[in-house]
Length: 348
Image 1 (cartoon, rainbow, N blue to C red):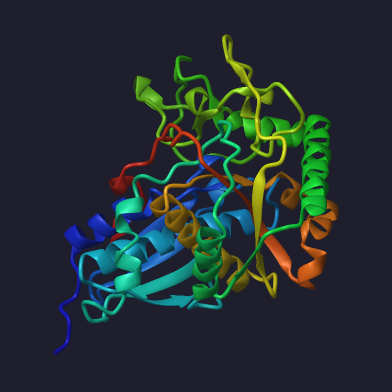
Image 2 (cartoon, rainbow, N blue to C red):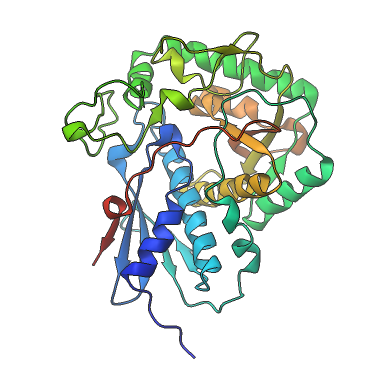
């Protein structure tokens, strides 16, 4: 029996869950289109929300959109409408990243549906973690999660963790002397209490200040409440958004001396690889959340081509690092705002 086509109400439900995904600077660079005639949902990247200086090839944009795609798959499976996904279905339109048809049978994706309770509990935690090690059994489960999406998750040796921390320091120094990167980061961060500015809508990616029109609160970017504290010791692997936008009264804390990091890698480094990596990243993050772990992401060295290659794990052989993930036990961390479904879902 053929499953009925999904309508706008179901599409809104799925997209509402999809947009809880992480993205670079919480820019939320995605756009969804429901084609009523076919009952398919198309996922587009939104270049107006790209980081044109820090992410010129749009690799990070693809990762964020793919994370949202994975969430859409989880939501659809939970609601008994498993999705069948095609990546990059139209070679003539590179911004059409994926197409999802809801032709599966209920129960086909039980492993995805099991992750649904973690969707809205997942946070990026920019606070210190405890020193308690993550059990090997949980790390093995995260490795398996990455493999299910065609990617690899490696645990770097202690000496390589030191290398990664050095690359983070190098990346931070490069950001400090690059006015374009500094302006871009500042455009996507804001003090929670600062007045909104006119001109809501798509960002230019050129450092233009973003705000909300008519006094409405922003629904994107990183508010100061989510910055986390300054590090009192050495380099913390979390990005310090307070460097671009200092906030009065922001606290300090000691982060882990030796953070527990994992490297998410792909064999290739083309847009299709980035889309697989973004789905694998979100699968790992949701599984970690379900396992009671806190997570954050470290992308600073990956934004500089000359630093990205040494970030790979040489013991594991060749591969392209798509994300460095920090794992541990710590606070859930504050949430960040999300754009309304009506703003990101279009029905045609």
